[in-house]
Image 1: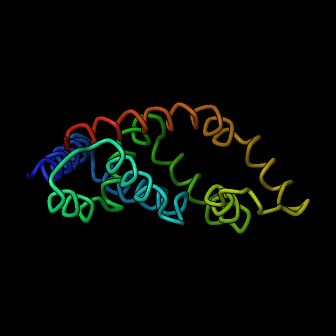
Image 2 (image 1 turned 180 degrees about the horizontal axis):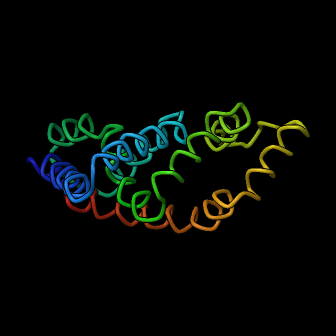
Length: 165
């Protein structure tokens, strides 16, 4: 009955363990990772995707099912991403990614990811700015790790959903 709460509690304890193990700067890193996930997932698709995954793979009592769905929220998504971003990026790199996603072209790129049909188009100037970012040290690293993070996030999400069964 309380499996989702237990899993979220474990994820939060892991996040707190990282915070205690490091200095107070890491607490700021934790907040910045949450901010980065908010910028990347402006349409809140992570929550919807996790809920769809849960609905498609779990068999629980209807009332329990509805209660668990209500408990899957943005903090659950952040907890699933936290360990990955913490593992692969320094705090300064997280700040650089935030800086990029706060730009007009970064926000538009994030919205484009949410656009299922990819109908957003970029002006030549926006494409130039995006290409400039991709050539930076953090841009190259982010591009290189993006698929790996997505794959590992999917595996963590499946483990999370499996724990709810």
